[in-house]
Length: 162
Image (tube, rainbow, N blue to C red; front, top):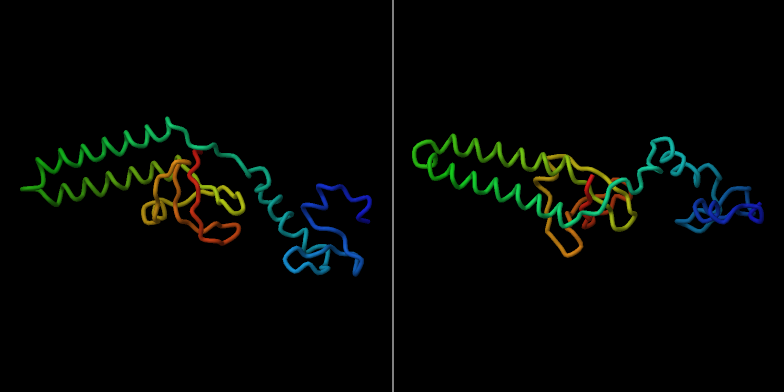
């Protein structure tokens, strides 16, 4: 069976084993039932995940300038509001600062996604996760420490634009 099996098929699903007519399990290297080796890829195909491998693009300088501009406007608005509101109406200032921060993080979560460096899976995160997870800019764009939903590894996921 492996002689007539195309190379791409063999690379993706493993080679045919002599015992049991199944396929070789990549994690153990032992023969396994045919349906077990096909199950993850069939599940991904049904979910439409096989087409969504690289649906986002890399972040560009323009994306970084735009994000920096939004943050700068937010900080300037908070400083100006603090000058006028903080002495007498501090509770209004805290409410405005929290609402502005929520809107900024919500905009970021809506416009950016992340790519796992281990398996290449691209995924989106919630506004709360975007706010609370550690992140840092880098020469290659930026990263955020997240758990990949596919490989379940905690990695420095790369920022991508939706």
